[in-house]
Image (cartoon, rainbow, N blue to C red; front, side, top):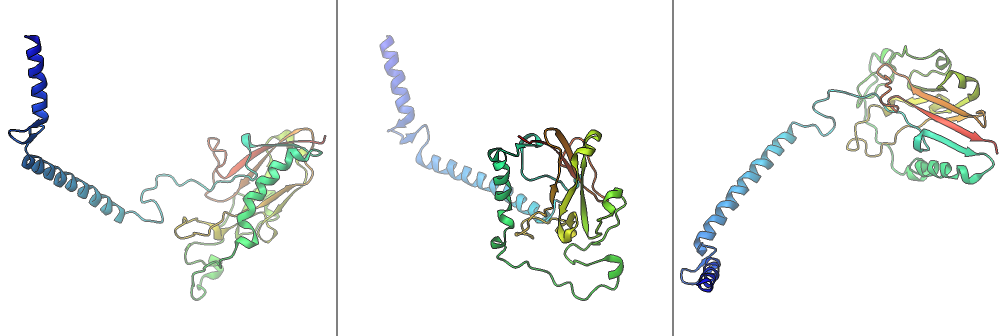
Length: 263
C-alpha cells in the first residue's frame, strides 16, 4: 500500500515537470510560457523605461558644475604636507632614517608641481576690455565674476606687515602660550614672497572646468624651533568667510606638534 502511494507521488512529480500527453512543462504549454514571458518582458521593460526617463529628466535640472541645493558651504580647508599620523612630526636631527620618510612624502607630493609636469599651457578666457570700475574692483576675471581684492578686517596685527590684498593670507603661531618663545623665526615662501594663496585659485569649479587644477601651496620654514621639547604650532588662513570650528581641525586652519630631538 505504502509502496503504491510512493510510486504515485513520484509519477505525479515527473508528470508535473513534463507532461508528455498535454506537452506541458511545469504545468504550462509552450504557448502559455511564451505569453507570460512576453508579458513580463514588456512589464519590466516599461518599468525600466520609466525609471530611466525620470533619471534623465532629473539630470536636466542638475548642474554639472555645482550642487542644486546647498544648505551649507564650508569655508576652505587648510592642511599640511607631509601628511602625518596624529598630526605630529618627530625625528632626530642626527639620524637621517628618522626624517627620511618626511622627505619622501614631500618629494612624492611635489612631483605634480615640477616643471616637467607643466607641459600644457593654461587656458585663459578673454575678458575683453578693462572694466571701467577696475580701480574699485581690482583685477577682473570673467569666469569667477567676483572682486579680486576683498576687504579683510580679520587679520592679526603681525600679518598686516606682509599683507597683499590679492592673496588669502596664512599665518602660523604658537598653539599654546607656553610655546610662544619656542617657535623662533618663521619664514614664508608664497606668491611674490607673500605668505598666502592667490585669489585666482578660488573658487574651485571642479575637474570638468579645471582639469589641470593644482591646489595652491605656501612653504613655511621654522628656522630655529626649540629642540628636545614638544612645540605645538597652529597655522590659519584669514578671510571674511573663513570661520574656525573645534569640530573640524582642518576648517581654515590646522595645528601640528613638533618633537625634534638634537641627538
